[in-house]
Image 1: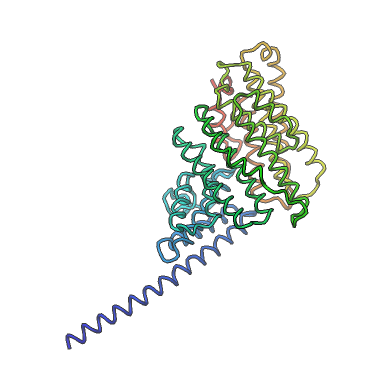
Image 2 (image 1 turned 135 degrees about the vertical axis):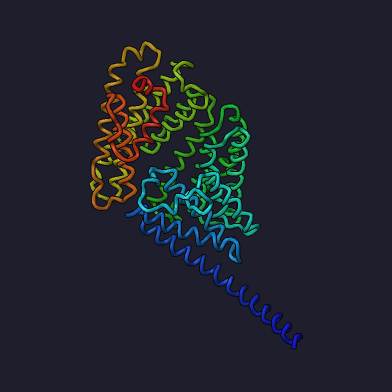
Length: 449
């Protein structure tokens, strides 16, 4: 009797173990499916309710995490990492203040279960997913990991950390490129990868410390060489407008990479001169700003004349971008994208205001002579930015576009309040962060002392 009882226990345990394994597979699959469903719901709500979308993304991430330790680990880790990057890009790195969204307490826990993570944790999640997938890592995961690294570069704490991340980003993009070439990927796919590869190269050079410039140039050289060999498949199944847009983006990106690899601000400005689209001119201004920061010229006491010249070059590009964006906004009466166009134009006005505010205070005769005019320009730019940002985006405006407009309005109004030395506290949500950003810049100190 004892023996049979023991046998029954063993048999029973075996049955339970088998059943447990079977249920585990089912549970893992259910978590993956429910995670995908929740993520799709988040995507649907993103254009109309950012908080609701984020709650769905959190639900999806929780399901992916629950499946990540089981039989579906590779797929679950891939989905979790991809979702972390998407949420970081859309929410954390964008114009959305997640702390002001309604009913998202479950998201803002600050622990590893939250779908809102800093970029360092996003990178770590991608590396963990690559390890889980092993040699079967999908190229999408490899590419997303490179993208995550390119966003992380700005936060690298040392030149050594920076170069480590830069090497990894370029290595992954080149691996994706080589796989696509060997698999005879369609030309349009290669063009998209080329555009993304140049974006990674630009991110590397844009954040490169002066001490690492030679190493960074050498690092991206082979990647750029491969991109330059991209076929131009006009008429091979790609929509002509889409093809033209991709080629235009490639030209801007390629020009920016070359400009950022320059040894001086003057050389950078020279390379950027041919750019002729609004996006090109705004990118040119960003490149010049990155280079003056790299070489320490963004200090009025270092080299005021070079600082003035660089700011003037930035303003030339931004003035052209402003004119083009204004024309586009006036000529395009469609509601689709109207809010985004207004936010973009307001951002250019604000950038021009900051430039003239800096120029007005440089220790130069030209700055002292034109100080009154420059300060008048600053207030005019900020007033224009406020008016543009206040303009409704129409019935088809997405909640993200509205959020971007509101952010630009807040940025313009806080600046005006500082310059007019009046209270900025009642301007609206988010003004504290804008004020902190302004207070950290040397050119606002005159009005804050």
